[in-house]
Amino acid sequence: MKNYLKIYSGLIASVAYSLIVRYLAEWNVIQINSISYLIVTPMISGYLPYLFENKNFIRNIYKCITLPIISTLLFLLIAVITRIEELICFVIIGIPYLIVSVVVSLYFRNRILNSKDYNTKNNYLPFVFLPLFLGTIEKNSQKIESNHLVENQIEINSSSSNVWKYLYEVPNLSKYTQTSLINYLGVPKPVQSTYDSKKNIRLGYFDNGLILNEKVIETIHEKKLGFAIDFSKSNLNQNLTLKNIVREKPMIFGGIYYELIPINSSKSILKLKCNYRLNTNLTPYASYITYKILNDFENNLLGALKRKLENEKLNRKQINP
Image 1 (cartoon, rainbow, N blue to C red):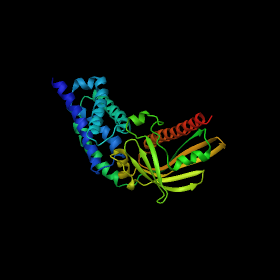
Image 2: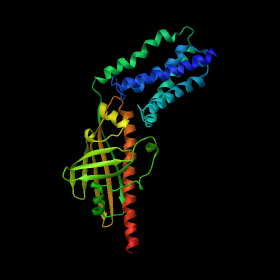
Image 3: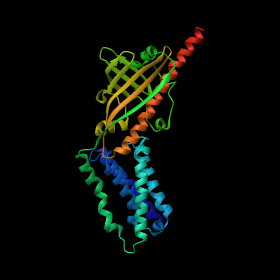
Image 4: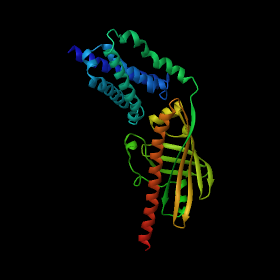
């Protein structure tokens, strides 16, 4: 009974610790987009169960692997239920947390098994405060900046002049978009957009209530359309991930561009480009995650536009054979 109590105590301590650090980020003491949160915190979380000195736990490699996995999943589940995170956090936060916490857990197991007088409390307990100390420094220090571009294209069986009509004001695409794993995790799908020619403002509507305010910044008739997102005038509608991005500014959108290339009188190529800047000390990981999300969005939008345009063209042929 005592052994189980020690194991559960270690599990509870890891979950509670991760939640405390997450709330430090929520209160803007540290940043989510930081080494202290995504790397150092899971290191401490993987170490905490060893404070309870359960010999059966240490000797069982299966438990040393599964406990940090369970504690990470419980932490993320509680974070989603309490609305400080969205489902997508199981990927963005979950991947580094799972990997780092398991590796650290195995490291301490190996050290303890190979050292008779190894004391985890004396050697490493002060490090539980490291995320707070390091996070404060990171928050106030300069990050690594890098520019990125995500670009996709699709061939549409429709004239460039006809496709152009759909770019300023995208019709309702609800029936034509597809739902990917990323969408199931909470990333919204595009629905439609409207355009105010007097204000030169485009409003992009998404299926979760998100409305992006987009100022048109470049127009070349039937060739190119560019716009920039103004998050201060957008309705984020409780989109927690976007709110964190706006608050911490780890990612800054430069511009989003449609480019239209005619092939012949009945075919054209539509390109969609998004350039942005990352401001983070975790550039490789942040670049991978943002690319996956934006690439999925672009392909979904282009595919939906293609299906919408070609379906309307087919309907016209059936009406006027």
